[in-house]
Image (cartoon, rainbow, N blue to C red):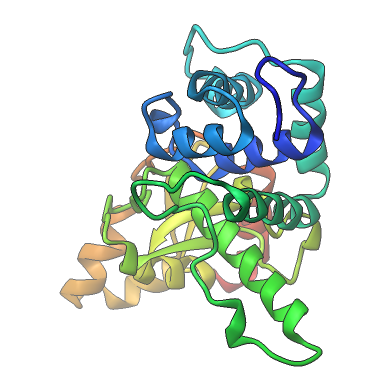
Length: 263
């Protein structure tokens, strides 16, 4: 356990950055029960943990570009963790989630509410030699979903639907196409299940200025009210941008290029 005011270790910074990825920006304050619980487990004050998250926010172009002021001052170690994650999201997501789970399991304090930042699956469901592979796959899927949904405030960026069971953390560049960015939240969009499927099949795309483009092939269905109202009608509509991890324009261009000939 760390002593108050001591230098943050790499493991502690990984835990903090994991929380930054999975926690909505508006909840990064010392009154948040999750931050209070993590702070107790780390032997730090809630204010110091909240400030560490704000330090990471000061490195996020999606946040600083909005003109927010009063953000924390990131240290060299904070910048190193930020760069390390951006260099290898897959490995760091698993490592940081493992540290977070270990920290919570050893904590003498009990959170008032169940943690939303731990993997919501039972490891005893898996057996045999493939157990480690299966568990890591679930950790990665869970991390990406929570990171993307939290960035968008738990709402579809096109429809603003907020029912979690209807939301998908949609990859812009497909999972299999870019292993380096599989878990990069900037490679994700929060979409309803319908719009995720349409995006995945190239029926809708997102332009460089974050507007919805609709495939001309959908014009054949203009007489179908549902398709007209839910897909064709959103042509030119601006998506709601996330508070954190704004979609990488290079990924959006890759997606459009991938479906160019199918248009």
